[in-house]
Length: 193
Image (cartoon, rainbow, N blue to C red; front, side, top):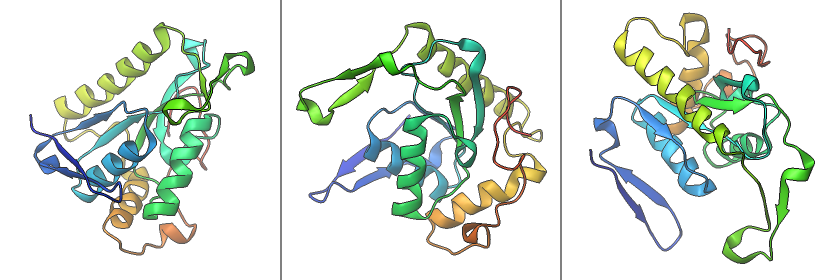
């Protein structure tokens, strides 16, 4: 396994050898490395599943998989979604593990701002593992049965197409607000439809 990460003086991340992977599981908590890994995966058409914010969550029954465009309760996912759109034009095409549970307000911890964070959500020990199990489940099912897609079924392929085209710098109809497939951008307990 080879992943080379380079950061230049403008804090631009370059991921090389990424096209050699069958699947990428992203569990990065830092924003810029996460964004650039997602872009590289889309650019090289390598499937990716990205873990969003597990902090401040307690209910394991609320964890689901969906497209990044369908995340609407997770503050970290919203920030990732906003930055993907602003930096790369990516609106969709990233499978995510996210919780439908809103973070508990009491879980926010305030810091002095050292290490570039002014606050963070405390994390319950079993939630990150559950996110990992969801991601692993998606990867194993899609690699074991390559002709049966779990996340980007035929009706949801426009979501994936938009993300990949945006990563290549190509304009798409989907980027103009006509994303197709899915269930109207809403997540359900059963996951994406």
